[in-house]
Amino acid sequence: MNPTLTEQRNVALLAGAQALFQTSSVLVMTISGLVGQRLASSKGLATLPIALMMVAAAATMIPASLMMQRFGRKQGFALGTLLGILAGIVAAVAIALDSFWLFVGANMLVGGYQGFAQYYRFAAADCASPDFKSRAISWVMVGGVVAALAGPNIARFTQGLGPLPFAASYLVMAVLGVLALALVTRLKLPAVSVGPVPAHEAARPLGAIMRQPIFLTALTGSTVGYAVMLMVMTATPLAMQICGQSLGDAATVIQWHVLGMFVPSFFTGSLILRFGVLRIMACGTLLLVGHVAIALSGNAFLHFLSGLILLGVGWNFLFIGGTTLLTQAYRPSERAKTQAAHDFVMFAVVSLASFSAGGLLNGFGWATVNWSVLPFLALTLAMIWRYGVSQGRCLAAVAGSAPG
Image 1 (cartoon, rainbow, N blue to C red):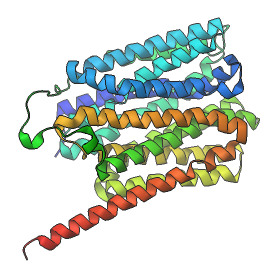
Image 2: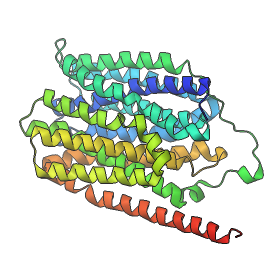
Image 3: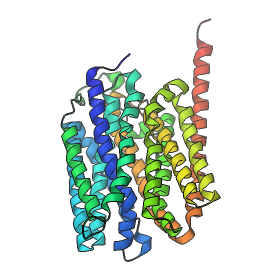
């Protein structure tokens, strides 16, 4: 069944908003560690702004979901873009004042923006027909391809503009927020129903939802994939600097990494429909293991480049796969609290991972950063395998009980 024109229009607007948000996010990930290193009193604090950005994103998830349930997603998305505009302005002021903690505050505003923007993919899924759901999620994530091209180049070409290094980069981020605001205010999304529901569709307690194997598998895939990707991505510009490589080299690696994150979105939804969500999530996990193998084999430019591309593709498969699987774990009346709980837990873990990146890198080196993620990847594979086996048994039981 082909998507309706309204579905296509909403997905296109959400993809555009995603592209603008991700461009800001990639810009921040490319330069915030370097700016933090310049402003902080200790090099170990260099990744603290990014870590607290993730803490702010996690803290925003539940309030954002509740607000959008009451007032609508469009209003919530508009508020998120306003936070992004303010973040860019505050970051530029922090650089002008040489204030590390004000810069941390600006990054936390970016986290607030991210807390709302994370629901772009859910908004696409919620307004799509069942057959279009996985493709709608993928198409929204395709917006990140623009970010892969624009984010690192904005960092490269604006870092030296004006008398204050990197200040112009954050002012550009404020402009991107204005453009995103113009897009999200044109959305025509269905209202989120909060009225009475039939007894068989009544909302279950959140604890019961979260104990489901399908929820736990989706959460593990999304969380581990995101945490591993962000921890390595956060450490990469600093690790490349330690290895004597330039910001331009780091920007190129980040650019190709983000292309790896989002280019597969053109076909990830179709792959899920053809091969099943669990197989795609397992492939994503193995690609992350492949990154670790490359990273441990050397620290030349090509090692960083090829490893980070695999890291991006692996994240894509796990994140889109986990999101698709999650949509099967809740009833319509449970949508808001389940999505919020999933993303809250995910970003709480991601914030710890991003903060640990700086300490692990400075204290133990690039190799330790990569070795440390392997146990979590093994856990993810085990969860996917276990859920797949349980599903196979369920299908076999249904087939065995069917009349001959």
